[in-house]
Image 1 (cartoon, rainbow, N blue to C red):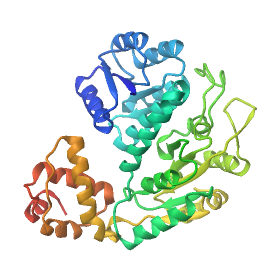
Image 2 (image 1 turned 90 degrees about the vertical axis):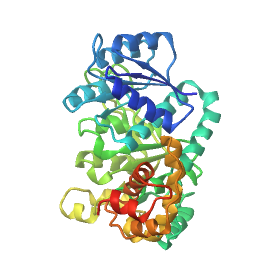
Image 3 (image 1 turned 180 degrees about the horizontal axis):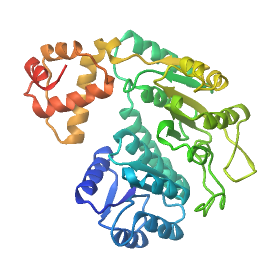
Amino acid sequence: MPKILIIEDETAIRNVIKNILLDEDKSYEVEVAEDGEEGLKKIKEMDFDLVISDIKMPKKDGVQVLTEALDIHPDLPFLMISGHGDIETAVDCIKKGAFDYISKPPDLNRFLSTVRNAVDKKKLVTKNKELTSENKALKRKVAKQYEMVGQSESLGTIREIIDKVADTDARVLILGPNGSGKELVAHHIHEKSSRNRMPLIEVNCAAIPSELIESSLFGHVKGSFTGAHKDSEGKFELANGGTIFLDEIGDMSLPAQAKVLRALQEGKITRVGGDKEIKVDVRVIAATNKDLRNEIAEGRFREDLYHRLAVIVIEVPSLNNRKEDIGILVKHFVPQIAESSGLIEKEFSPEAIKVLEDYDWTGNIRELRNIVERLLILGGNPVSKEDVENFVKK
C-alpha cells in the first residue's frame, strides 16, 4: 500500500491534493502535515513512498525539508509544489534531488502521472518483492483508465495498427489534437508489447525547463553542478527494458533534440557531468499536436530526429471526426465519474446525446468528459436535451 505524505500549509490545497490522490487510487495511504517542521518529523518517524511538498511554508520551507529528508532517506521521491514565483527554486530542488515539481494550479493528468512514476520508482528501489503484485494491480488499474472506447472506423484502424506494431520495437509517432487520446494509444502499445512487465515512463517535453531537460532525460553525476549531492538516474535509465513516452515532442528544444537523437542512434546515454556511456534498451513512443513537417521547414525541429521517430505514424482523429463514438463515451464516463466524485449515476436521453453529437468539440475527449461531469452535477435524471442546452455553451 503506497504511503504518501502531503506537506502544505494551506488547508484548502492540502485537502484538495489528498482527495485527488484518494479518488485516483483507494489503496493510497495519505498523511498530511501543516508545515515543514511537522513534515520532517513524520518523515523521521514513518516510511513513505512519496512526499508531496510545498516550497514556501512556515518554520521550515520545502527546500530545507527536501535537503534534510534526503540525508535520512536518499531514495525518497519528493514532488515539489511551486507557485509562479517559485519556478527557479523548484528547478533548484530538482538539482538537489527532488523527483519532479508541479506548478500551481496543477494539471491533473500530469500530476497523477508524476505521482504514479514516483511511487513506481520507490517500489523498484526499495520493495522488489512487494512490487511484483502491486505493479500488476497498478497496471490493471492503468489499463482500465486508459481504455480506448468507441466503435468508429477510425478507432478500429488505430486498434489494428496497435496490434501489428505493439510487439515490435519499432518507434511510433502519434499525431493528433490536444485531448484526442494520444496518451491512450501510447499506453495500449506498451501494454500489448513484450515490454509490459517493465515501466512506461512518461515525459512531458513541454513542461521541462530547457536548463533541466538533459538532466531529466539522462540523469547526472554527483558534483556535476551545485546541489547535485548524489548520482541521479534520468528518465531513459528508469525506462530501461521498457518504454519511454515523449509527449509534446514538438515543444522540445533543439539542443535537447540532438541529445535524444544520439540516444536513439547509439542506444547509449551519458549522464550530465559524467563520461561513462550507459547502454539503454528503451522503446520510444513520441506524440505531438504540431505539424512536424512545418516545424522542420521553420527550423524548429530536426528532420533527422523526425525520421528516427516516425517509423510508424498513428494519426488520432479529433472527436469532431468520430462523433458516432460520443454516446458510447458518455456511457463509459458516467460510472467512472460517479465513482470518483461521489455522484449519482444518471441516464442521458437520446435527445441529449443528439445535442452532444451536434456540438463543436474543440477540446475533444477531455472536454467531453468535463461536460459529462458537469451534467451529472447540474442536470436532471435522466439528463435531458434542455439540460445540455442550458449547461453546455456552444
